[in-house]
Length: 327
Image (spheres, helix red, strand yellow):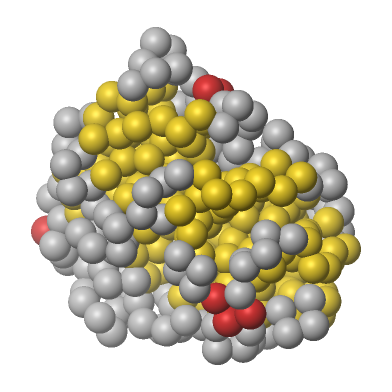
C-alpha cells in the first residue's frame, strides 16, 4: 500500500523529474521475507557491505549479529553473547566492526565472518562509523557525552571526544574531513574535525527535535536529519542553516540514502517514507510504503538499490528486501 503526500509544485530536479506516474506507481515492491534461524528478538542498526554482498543487521534482542548473503538470500546469526547495535565496514583493514550496549567492540573478518578481535569499551556503545581517511572507527557512547575514536588496525581507543550528550546517528564528509553527529538531548548536530578529533560547531535541528537518523549528500552538500515530531530537517552543510523541512512517519530511527536513485528511505510507524532528492538538495516526499510496524532501521544495497529492513513478529525474526521503482 502506498500512502501519497502532495509534491511541492515548484520543485525542479536536475537528475530526473518526479511525474504523476512516479507518484501513483509502486515506489517499492516487496520480495518474500527471509527467516532468520535461531533466537528471535528486536533489531537495531543495519548496514551493507557491497563488496561481499552482505547485509548486516544488529540483533540486540538476541545478543547476536545477523548476516544475510544477498547472493543466495540466506541469513545466519553470529553469537556474540552480548548486545550489539552499530555495524561498520572497514575496507581499509578488510574487517568489519560491531559494538553496542554490551560494552564490547568486536572485530570480524569481512570474508569468513569469524571474530578476530575484541575490545572492552569504557561504557555502552550505540552508533558506529568508520572513516577510511584516517583509518578510525568512531563509537557513540550510548546516551553519554563521549565519542571514542578507535584505530582500525589495532582496535584500540586512541582519543575520546567530548560531546553535548545523548548521541544518535553519524555521517561523514570526505571532502572536508568532517564528521556530523546527531545529538538528541540538545536537538542539534555537532560538527567534528576528524583531523584533530575536536568539535568545531553545533547546529540546531529544530523544528526537528531528538534527531536520530542522519545522512549526508556530497553532491548538494546537504545533511538530512530525521527527528521528532515526524520531521526531516534539510541542512546546508556549509552554513549549518536549515533550508527545508519535510513530513515523516512517526518514530523514524535510522535512515538511508541511495545516491544513484537519489532517494532517502526513512522507516517508522509501519511505513517507509520515500523522499526524492534533487542535485541541488531540494527534496520532496514521493510516498509511504507499508512495512511491518516493528521495523525502524534499514540499509540500501548499493549493488542493486534494494532496500533491506529487519523485524520480528514476536516468534520469528526476518530480513526483507524491497525493489525500488525505476522512476
